[in-house]
Length: 321
Image: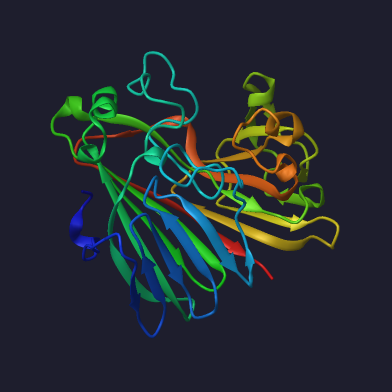
């Protein structure tokens, strides 16, 4: 596993639900998921399959969009929530180390080990964090043969009254000069919004982006605020460390703030009606009107990790009242 100086005590996951309570928060676990509960009423639920966050509530409402047809039984990647993309984004390119892997890699379709929980304070309030681990031994034999890299991942999910932080630590556990590997990483976050037609995204003006709906051609964002009015699938390169999602019909009232660390890019995605209709596990079909994917990651270029080296990156999502 990744450097164990920060690894918390391992939690025993059994078929019977278990609960751990402190003065700050509660962690409830069962055979397939973990739920964090904050004294404020905020909560987060994470499946062990893919370490996928499938629910985040704050201020009394759900903040993530999840398809009602999404499989939550470990049979396929979850449609919605926060799936994890590693070690490749999109269909793998021929000639790369990841060329034999499925689209978006294996992190979102592999069962992770539950490592443990920690608690602390941030900005004067309590938080609760749960850590998950994944390494080469966690993969099935076929996937391990296709990837070949000796790696370790620690994924941390931290909850406060109004924020959800997701952080990934990647370690190259190989030895020797030939053990270096390249990877992409992305937090594929489906944010729930009341009406996508009314929101705007600030912070992208002037950035270069590749538009996947136009054959990955390169463009420069010329809008002060980005409005979603059609199918959108863009990779904004070298994006600022903070973006805001606002209600454009209510004096730009903040809805979400997305703050990233160690991540270079942001993907903005909404399939719109034409795209949603082609996705088998997308329900309801008009659900694209209540979601926007603002995905922090490093995907426009490969991250190279030398043997024995460690990389770390993450994102904090803040939900506003």
